[in-house]
Structures are given as C-alpha cells and as structure tokens.
Image (cartoon, rainbow, N blue to C red; front, side, top):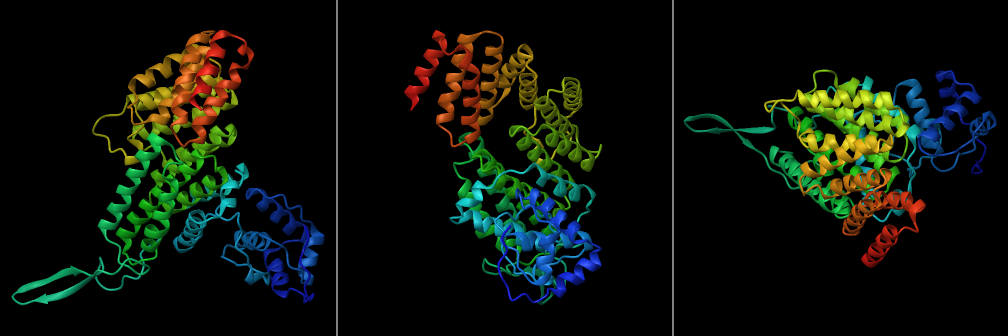
Length: 482
C-alpha cells in the first residue's frame, strides 16, 4: 500500500501503544491485514509498513481506523486514530464494528443511515465478506445487556414534572419538546416506530425490498435518530432500542433483497448491537437468523450453520417452540447448501417437532408469529431441492403454496420456483415451464433482485433442455413480458 509523505516526525504515540499492547511490528501488521479481510479489504502490510508508520508516515484510506480498532480490541478500551497519532478518516467500509457502548452504537448506525439516504452509491456496491460475520456474532454471544441506556433523565422516574394542584395530591404531567435531538421520547413515539415497521414489512412482502427501501432509510435518519439522541429513562430506552433494532434489521433485509449485500451485512450487524442495548436476547437471535439466511443465499453454507447455532446457543432452551423451530429450520438450510444430508434431515426433524409442540397460548414474539406450517413447509422444500430430493421438494413446496397467505407474494414466488425446479428434476418439463413462467411474470411486477435471481437460476437449469418445445414456449412467454 502506498503511504502519504510526511515530515517524518517519529510517532511516539503509536510506539507507546505498541509497547503497551505487546505487539511486534510484524504482529501488528498481521492483525491489521486480518481485520482488513473482515471488512473486505486486501491490505498486505508487513513489518516494514509498521516501521514506516513509526517513522511518521501516514497510512492511506481506511487503514488508520483499522489500526485503531486493532488496539481497541487488544487493550479493551476505545481508541481513535488520533490517539495513535494517525490521521482520522471516515471509512466507507465502516459498519461491521460491534460497538462498545450504546452511545457508540447510535453513532455508527446513524452514520450508516445518513450515508445510505444520500447519494452514496458506493455504499450499495460494498461486497459481502464472510469473515465479517465472526467478530459481531462472537461479541453478541459473550456479551451482556448494557447496564444503562437511559439518557438525560434526572429527577423522578419517567421524566415528569410535579405540579401541585390545590386540594389534590401532586400529579405527574409530561413535558413535551419539539422533534429533534434532546426531545423527550414517549411510548407513543415507540408505538409509531412499530407501526411504521409493520407498514414497510407489508410493502416488502408484497412488492419487494426495492419498493420503499429508501423511504425507510430516510425515516430512520429523520425520525429514529433524533429519538435515540433524545431524552428517555431506562424502560423507554430499552423499548426504543428494540424498535430501532427492528427497523434497522428491516433496512438490512430490504438491502439484501436488492442485492446490496455488503450494505445489508452492515445493517444486520448494527441491528444485532441495538438488540443488545435493548436487552432483547431473543431478537438478537432473530437477527442472526437473518444473517444466516443471507449467507445461505450467497452460498456460504458453513457460515450459515455457525450463525444459526450461535443464535440457538444465545437464546437457550427457554425460547418458545415456534422460535426453536425457526432456529433449527434455518440451520437446516445451511446444511442443505453444503449437501449434508444427515445433518440437514436432523435439523428439519427438530424444527418439525418443535412446531408441533407449539400451543395457541405460547408467548411468541411478534417477529416469530409469521413462522407457521406454511413457512416450515417452504424450508423443507428448499432443503430437499438443494439435496436434489425432488419428489419430497415438490410435496413440501405444494403444501406451502396451499397454506401461504396471498400477502406473502415474494415468498410464494420463491416457493413456486422451488416447485418448478423439483418438477424439472422429476422430468416433468411441461409443468416446470408453466410454473417458471408464472414466477417470471410475478418477478417482473416486483422490485426484488432475489426474485429475478430465483427465475434466472431456474432458467440456467433449463439449459440442457433448451431445444424442447416446452422450453421454447417458456422463452416466448417470458420475452413477451418485457
């Protein structure tokens, strides 16, 4: 890497911290390179690079921030590039950090919202990096809920003003402020965040992540960030962080759906950190499940299995049966991608038993209520397709389509493609092409890169049969859609 010239003043701050951390020059260079890989960067520094830094040369680009993060992890306290005598920068690749405090988490995620809501097109081009999954999932697993998240609420609990009323006991009256940093956050504010989340979720299911993603990100920037920087007590603060985590995960989900995979990965990491501030261990497991699904889609089966297992370990055996079923089903998807028949089958069996043990009175979190027989049948269908067990894949996909509500249009499209692929694997070419054409038409009506990719995957599977009459008819139908 080329460095910027300097006056060659020795960097005594960096030398002092290297001695405190017990690093050799080669050891520091190696750790910076490893951290760079987590952020999708191929840096290739060596001991000579560190010698130049000590002599006063300044590393370029994101490297100062990466060096600071290496020392932060080693010494257990937050250090900036300036603390190391290095020029600070705002790295484009930021967002994979698992913040040390709730305040830092707000800074990182709000910076991500602001960049994404602007014209930073490069943010959507950042590559997904499997190595970037390791540290956040580990830090979440071994971490605990933050001791305190409340902000600026001295005096009586709930941030109330005591107003004496003649002849009556003193009663609380809430203060109100204008929207903006320092505002007092209320239960109504949090209810609004939740309602907005449900609205955007419905749009995503029906029309794809690209339909209203940018509006969601702007809402986070202009509404959620001022709340997080506002005034609230502990109880309201936990609920606020939980709502922000949910919306941030949804921003990641919609980014994933338009194939902005590196950006989605960063949203998921930050949602995971916000869930820790909320003290909501179960929701953290759901974020990890989402990360596992992205890893499955991108073909990283081993990482997908590991994320699902971290989620299971983190939430424990006390989770409701529906949640246990979801966690095991997502692990099965990772095994399916890897072609691990026995492990996949065992995970599916656990998922099925857990869902069968669920009862109407179970206290299921809002994010787990969508996981039902239709969704489990869908997971079975995908797994059997990946294992090339096409008859079982077709049976489960058909069952899922029968049970799935029309509002889940994108999920139904995915399942229809799975069914088409299964029919193709069974040699039923006419049925496969008819199902594929239906899916292609639906994909054209959505703003979902995943929907398009499902159809393209089916078309790649059609290639060996390209001269068959059914395939020619399929191509004519799809061409007419354009």
